[in-house]
Amino acid sequence: MNTTEDVLGHFMSQFFAYPWPSKGGGFETAQAYSIEEILAKAPQVIFIQSFGTSVSEHYKDNPVWKRVPAVAAGKVYEVPTELWASGRGTRAFGIILDEALAKAAG
Image (cartoon, rainbow, N blue to C red):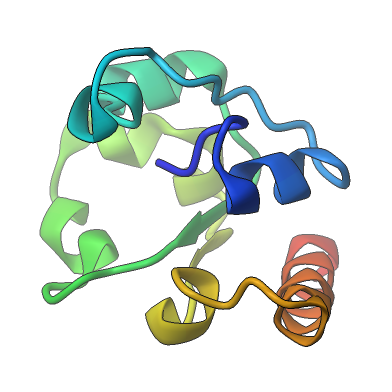
C-alpha cells in the first residue's frame, strides 16, 4: 500500500480521500494492510500495482475482498507498475493523476 508518508501516497492524498497512513516500522510493516483493514476503510476506488501475479486475480474469489465497495462496484484498476511504482517526475505524476481522475470519474 502506498501510504501518505511515501511520495506517491502523499501525492494521491492531495486529490483523493486517502486513508492510508504509514503503520510505522520498516518498509514491509509500514505499508502492510490486510484485506480486512482495506474493507474497514471502505474505499470507493482502488488502484493496484501488481508486481508479478495480478492482485485482482489473486483475490477474486476472496469473500472479504468482494465486500470492499470498490471491488463490488467494479472500480478496481490495475495500473502500469513501471509508471506508478517508479515515475516520480512532474510528467509522470501528471500522467498518473490524469489516469487516476479519469478512472475514478468513470
